[in-house]
Length: 536
Image (cartoon, rainbow, N blue to C red):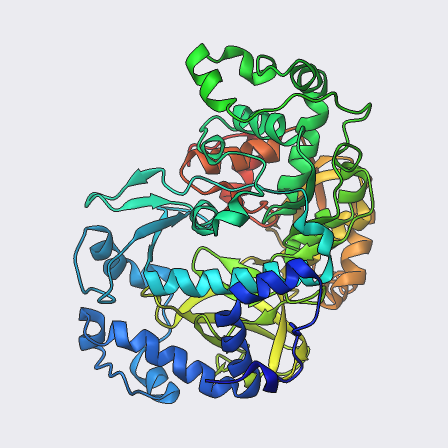
């Protein structure tokens, strides 16, 4: 076992503030795993593969692919092809039906539901070892926060999560969200810092849930505020302004009787108000004026960057924003260990990175500045699973790459080879329409194709958007200069349209934290967004 004393480029030294040193004692396992990865990333990934194969080799999948516990990384590649989710559905359906030893020999603790882009929801298995690897990565993330700011150990930490369990598979296996599962799996001293009781997150009505979260949180000393998607933070700020008079009155007299709570029966009101406190709020509906906020935590990569510039005005202060990592319901792939980009987490899953030529590489084989498609092998049956996410290598921590999320591999607009990504579209809209709530684009097809962009909120002109896109994407600029692409077409969206679209996705079973903003849609779904039709 590696020694922490030999850890190269140690991001978690033994010295530091009191809360950090205490938390470091509880994170010794993840720290030792990180030490092994920093010293010899290939050996660390081989060890993780051996752990995966221990569970997989005796399963139906393992036998059909002739898997052995002693396989090398190269032999693993030769035995198992890269697959997308659709190709694994027959195996995953058998797990959901309650069959044993399908993909692994361990018990299936629950299924995580995530929607993907369209069609039937994904049901992803959870095993004990998979859960432990995700928890280890989460612990390193929290440890870094405490190392950098001792004050975060005081006060409360507000997180917005979806319910851990919402329904069950035909075989009776619990199904729910990963954010709720992670919330309940945290140690008691972490859950103690949560200002909102978990049952509040189980409320199905989105307006009532948001009002109840705010009613609990507004009387608490919130120092850290976390949500995977920054648009969720902004939506909460909008709801705070919207219900400000009702919330102020409820908090001032210690009640829970106004706004969406007004329609509750006495029993439900009593149950949801357990732990609510009384407090007279300040004069402004701005979180930074109401709480001793020190940090915001959310995704920063890809199209999420569009919202980052909007946070200071919405929150009421310039606050540091920390990345929550490259994560998904499928696992935890890169951990933010400081204010830089997340570092590849080789102690959880086997990670591969496929270049534009289709060649897979391991983490230590990557090139700075290059983009790759992320392929994962997890302890929960996702073997050489194409996540269809693109990441960019932005630097290194020792031999481990720092990764920035770029966007979904399939979510690009490319009529003439311009390959416009969600990240680029979001940045261009932010530059052209700084007051917009959001936007969505698709392609218009004709002799000269063009970009169709629906914008909610402020929008100036198609020329402004066109100029921003040309600055950001050189191929787009080339196609416009040569007349191969036409001027973008702008269509206004009524207020609340994008929020309604996302709420409809949640109503269909998608976990709230996993519902992305619809920056790029196919023409059919884009038209539904424009027309406000969600039936498909």
